[in-house]
Every structure is written in structure tokens, then in C-alpha cells.
Image (cartoon, rainbow, N blue to C red; front, side):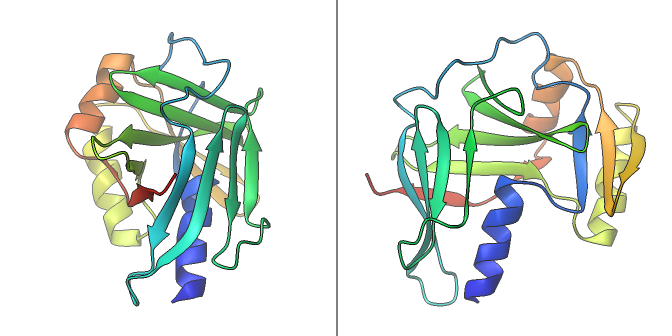
Length: 181
């Protein structure tokens, strides 16, 4: 179970083999933040669904993020705001954009009133789910498929309004991370 959670968090924060991607950091036309806002900074943990105990830790700081494992070892990864990690704020969501293989991968962070955050992505890892999601998105937006090494990217180019529509229609899903500091 521990290995599963580590793989899940890693895939959520970085990228995986199959991703919906973008030509530019999203939402287009919204300026990037120079630092992570103080309200989002903090220490967050995921729950181990098998034991109910806290698992890995995400630490968000002004310059980016870092992760620690259950044993408090800081080897899981980090990201620093740069030309390959861009954060934007729009309509109460933080848009976290990672550059990968010439494409922009997007994760949304939605703060909850209790201080926790929702970490959201368009999940297309499962073959059947991917076909269904891509078919639905293709009714609204053109999808271009790109391959880079072993990765497959499904690039879309939405307007900010179209992106908000995808969010409201539930295409972005993911786990809740509980704020502990």
C-alpha cells in the first residue's frame, strides 16, 4: 500500500505516461505568480487508505514545494517556481503548470474552507476511462496527440472560459490533502 501511495502522489505532482497537456501555462492570458501566496503555504499530508494513518507530506513554501516520505526523509521531490514550473491564480483555483517533453502538464489546487486542499488533474491513466474522457473533450476542443519517448500527450488549447467549463463539468478529480501546519 505504501508503494501505491508513493506512486500516486509522485504521478500527481510530476507527470505520468499519459497526460492531457497544453501549449502554454494555463489559463492562457492570466499572469504567473512570482511566489506562492501565503494562504497556500503550509504542510499537507495524505492519508494511507489502508491504515487511515497519515502518509507522505507535501510542504508548500514561497518558492515552490518539496515532499517528505512517512519517515520524514526529503527524497520524494521538489519543484521551484521557474520557466518550467508556473503557478497562476484564477477563479479560486491555483493552476500549477509543469513543463514536460515540450508540453505543459496542469494540476489544480483548490483550497477548502477547513484549510485542506484538493489536488486535481484530468485522470486518463486507465485505458477505458481515457477513451471516454478524450471522446467527451473532443466534442468541445480539438485534441492533438504527441508521443515523446514512452509518454503520450493529448494536447488541447482551451480559452480560459473553456477550461473553467471543463473544471465545472468534473473532468478534474483528485485527492484531498489535509493541512497539518
